[in-house]
Amino acid sequence: MPDPFSRRTFTTGGLALAASLLPGSPGWTQTITANVSQQKPEADQDSASLAARTDVNQHLTIEVSINGMGPYRFVVDTGAERSVIAENVATALGLLQGGSVILEGIGGRVRVPTVHVDTLSFGPFRRDGLNLPILPRSNLFADGYLGLDAINGTRVTFDFGRRVLNIEQPLGHLSAEGADEANVRARGNNGRLRVFDCMVNSVGAIAFIDTGAEVSVGSQALYNKLISRNHSLESFANVVLTGVTGGTITGELIHIYRIRMRDLSFTDGTLVIADVPDFSIWKIKEDRPALLIGMDYLRQFASVSIDYRYKEILFELSEAPPRPTPGVEIDHTV
Image (tube, rainbow, N blue to C red):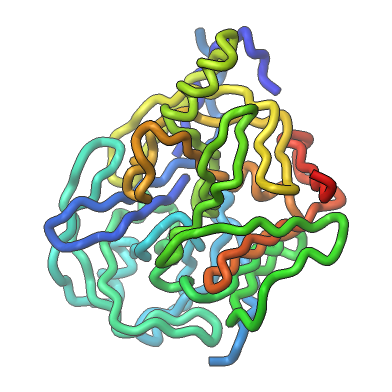
């Protein structure tokens, strides 16, 4: 863990978050990826097994076909309600532009065009008649993002050990069959899965699983609750978050000794405190503590399965997590 008494500024640039985008109404799309090493300290088949690889920001990406053309590499983003496409891909395919949408990003609201996609396919799955917002490739660092409009209703397994992404039709509830597995129930509609049985240190919070997020983010309301119970808690670094729509915002990096979701616990981790995204988009009141669990936590597991039909999340421990922290524990006696 970084020295809590030395103040550092980290530049970030991959967490993809997208809200419902309606013509003329604000929507949310943001990308924030941590890369702390770059900055010196300062004062109809039922399933598809798709070989996944990581992009430059360490996101899992899969092959996607658009109108039968491709393949293109899309980030699989469980925090994005709508899929988006890179501008250069839309141009190369000659996609017809549709109406514009307003995206609310870190730098404020911007209006962006959309393109109509007849078919978007990945493995045996096909989605028809999508209107995808266009964003610059230099902001996305990928050909696009595959959001909940494409993966909702399926079961998605991120197998980090084998670097395979499995997408299948759910045929029954997920079951935790071993001591190294934990099943966490969630609630929500239209793929907006929220875990209500979550504790951050001693504070109750609502958690989201966001595979497009390179860093885990806590809301200001969460920080206010934490600091009210531990006055000595303070940030030890500034984190500059850069959005795909342009602009930046500075968040505060704090140490968290435990995040618990039912039988599962993360220990000795960190959170960036920033109201990114605007958690109210997910129907969370401004004063309700909330957090996004990003890839910095999820990659510690051998696999994570998200079932959008039965609203369950299955975590499988890894025998050799890629990093010493955050730690992960499963205790079925809790």
